[in-house]
Image (cartoon, rainbow, N blue to C red; front, side, top):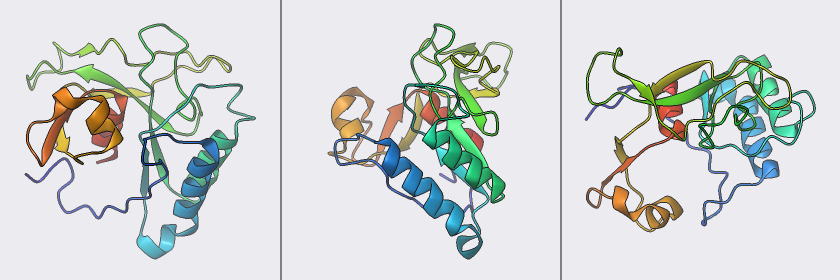
Length: 183
């Protein structure tokens, strides 16, 4: 029950609404808050298990600019690649930024060996749509992972089959894989 990073101190910064919807302004505010409070809370890693359709180059996107500010502040930024695969060019924003660690998801098939791992079908693929960058940077287990459940949450309502009991749920996707890498 120790999880991927036992002993880690976790600071949760909520940017999504009750319905799970996220807008770029709130994400930028959250990232900037983390960067501003980095020293106060000893923040070394920022996990972003959110993403949106990339509408242009990472050089001009406001969320990409925010993750670069966090990176310049000394924070390792880990971002979920997105779940619009398996087509190429589906990396989400801000996972399309060259300074972040972009994480795709694999199904480890329940074995410790990596030789039988396969990408999950929905894991976004590169290159990035606007800048042609090779992404994701790495992959991690992202299929059938057990995590804490928030009964009544948007994800709980959208994916009711993931519920194991009142405390835990099983989920898949690049958000899960990014959390593994962040740990």
